[in-house]
Length: 292
Ligand code: C2E
Ligand code: MG
Ligand code: MG
Ligand code: MG
Image 1: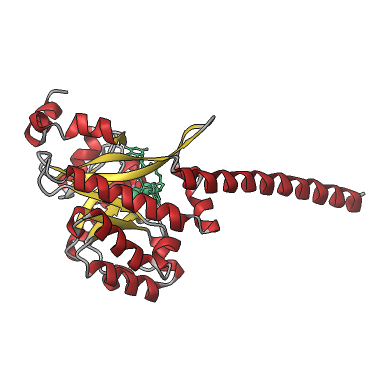
Image 2: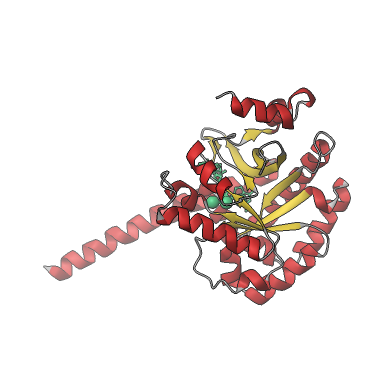
């Protein structure tokens, strides 16, 4: 009986796998076509400077305008793009769009930077630096208008190659941020080894904070900020959703903030209307905060 059951389970499992594999193939094909047709849009989420009087920049976050599916979030397709290698052409498209946007916005606000997320496979690709150089040249983008966000998973792939690649990028004058800091399993020693200027505290640390400044969650936040500062890094908090999270981050000297408390990611048009209107930038921004 157990043998029959075992075989039954196996067939069921296999059938399930085939269905999953089939769905994946459909998604992969749709993604391939979408890249050809450029069916994507970058949204931009505001980053605010420590004094809350300064717009520090924005993070570019991709959405797939998939017919019949609405705006598909990156968590649903970036990993497949990684596994299939489609992240190489898609990543180049993202970088190009972000550069064009940075160029369009750079004069509207001082020291405005657009941060772009990079996947490990994209960064470790042998052609990455030449693709980057070509995009910068073709779009007329100055390296200080953009910032590149990498994750700890990059370090787990190949620390030496990651290090070499990031140094090449850094030598162009591009700021490099460690995204989602604290969620990976790699050793901390990479922080010293890699040419990083920015440390982004993962939103799980920010969101675990419930308002008690003596809690272990508060100590974690304080410790991560101190670690970043001791390595001369700018520390950015992501996922700031309320006043008390902002308060604890500010109390410990966090340099920049990002999260729904300030703004969700917005289309370029919306972002421009809300944050880059010349009659409504930095100073008005503080006023609008005090109003609520
Ligand atoms: P990430 O780089 O850590 O981006 C932050 C994510 O947190 C974004 O989700 C953003 O919408 C969300 N977020 C921002 N503020 C808040 C908040 O206050 N509360 C909560 N709960 N969430 C907040 P999104 O846009 O869905 O992106 C998810 C992830 O997908 C990104 O995480 C990044 O790892 C990846 N991703 C997004 N765009 C790109 C891209 O262009 N290229 C690559 N390689 N990866 C991307
Ligand atoms: Mg990011
Ligand atoms: Mg992040
Ligand atoms: Mg994150």
